[in-house]
Image 1 (cartoon, helix red, strand yellow):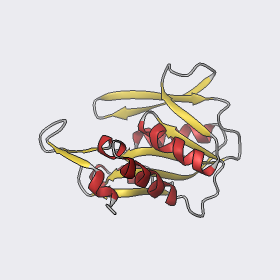
Image 2: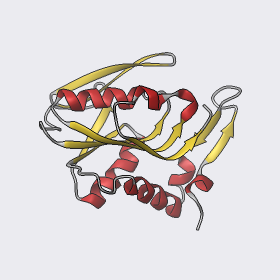
Image 3: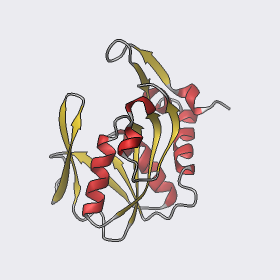
Length: 174
């Protein structure tokens, strides 16, 4: 049986020289790789009391939805601004070049719920931090943040130091 790292395609010098892009599509395109990724991420939740799974657009949807399904928990969408039809709350964060705003429905989390945040990658931690702020604004408690991959060289974990963070794969570089 292959290890999850063997399913990740590494593309040197993308999007710029010196960067190694860790491509998640190679995992998704292989049924065994996709199953292993979901199972490995879900295993990070062993012993965690969870009421709701929330996933960040778009790859957080891909991994979060099957985990929520497997655990028979509701799944909350964290979307780019302007994509949700009902009343929302929003949170903005800085990107390498510019800023972004994400939002979620105001009625998606109720006070006191234990929420797990799911995404494919922690780089600088901005998206997950903004997501956590919204969950807390609605009265939820972020009990765990799980990702498939982490780029330790970008120090996202430091930004998320107040949370229980776990990743399946950790790459030391950027």
